[in-house]
Image 1 (cartoon, rainbow, N blue to C red):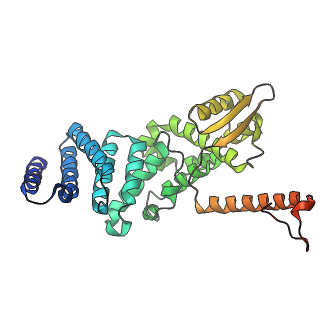
Image 2 (tube, rainbow, N blue to C red):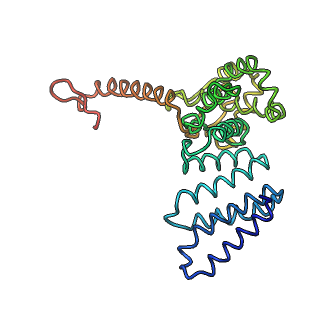
Image 3 (cartoon, rainbow, N blue to C red):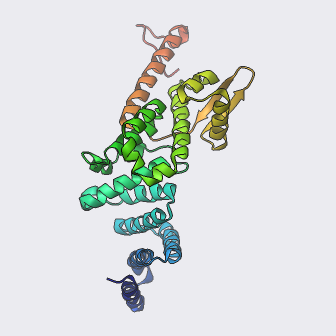
Length: 306
């Protein structure tokens, strides 16, 4: 159907609903749903400004509503993601699409739609400014639609970014050079990709350290990130200014002391690694308490609650 004709028809349906005797509260959700369909039609017709106006109004209305059907939530987030895809707002697309997937199941969507969404989400996760935690995507069933397809390499790439493994990233770039070069967005943002994986490499290194031992030599960071000392200092300044970490750089000792690392959602493998770290911490605590007489009870047990 020609978008303009469809828009006129849906607007007439909204007018009929507004003229009915139903209370406004009961009509709010269905009218919002219809307005999102109109917004998507405006986008198809090339009127991005009108689409944006309707989406922003819809988001504000949705935030003020209670007990809204999942289909209405899905419609608002889906149309928002369509708009951000057209505008190449990668971070906003990623956020809107993941919100959309929280209100629909992949089983309810056609396989080709799931595959397309998985590709787009993977690219957005890699390219999105400020998108540093992508475990939510890795753990989501939509990513499985990339398996056994020409785009399967994106799964490995997203996983490498989440782990902040710069060496594995370089290996994947070599292995999948043809596929990478076939993605214009990745080619045109090659320098930003390198910068982002380097930041995630730093965060991964710092996150892996015990909370009470996060004083790291700049040379250690340089080895992990493949940067020289000046590059490491710029990297740390970027991470500090972006509020990804908190701490201080000691230029005399050529080290950095980090007091806080931005929390991130974890993949299952990262959860297992964290479990092992917690177990090691408990063993260390038990060893410490063993030397405190008041922390022991008859029989040799240690009171961890003291």
